[in-house]
Image (cartoon, helix red, strand yellow):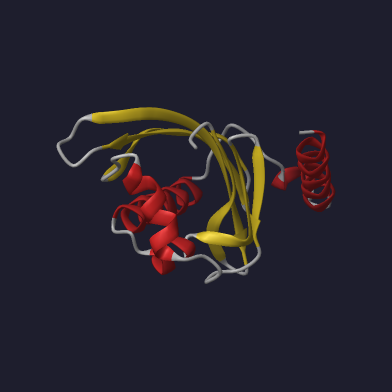
Amino acid sequence: MKRIIVVFVMFISGLTTLFAQSSATDQGSHAVDPRVRAAVFQVLDEYMATFNAKDLAGWERTYQFPHYRLASGKMSVLEKAGLRDSAKVFGELKKTGWDHSQWDHRNIIQASADKVHVDTEFSRYRADGSLIGHFESLYILTKEDGKWGIKFRSSYAE
């Protein structure tokens, strides 16, 4: 557990250093440029659509790399696309009865021209529409090389 905390603190410190180099006008605020909002929501829509389609390659196209996920007390880092097996990724979910997910809410809580923090909640459902569970998360999206993508996810989901 200590190792996870150290890795997370190092990650946040690195992000702080990286983004501290921005000018004061580029730092995050609660005001969101409508173009940024539209671009971020488009990525999140694509993320959920490709996830539900079990399209691993499409799902990974919504990421920035390296891509970070903190869930179940574990930090995982995906260095690049194409390193995971689709059957394993989606097979584990199917064992829980999962058929699809949907966003319950997505609230941008801070934003700049190239980084956005999004408070989210999603639900997982079985094929008959019955609820498996609701899961709160924080998603951090960044704009890199002109493309918005999900850089970091911190979730209470397994």
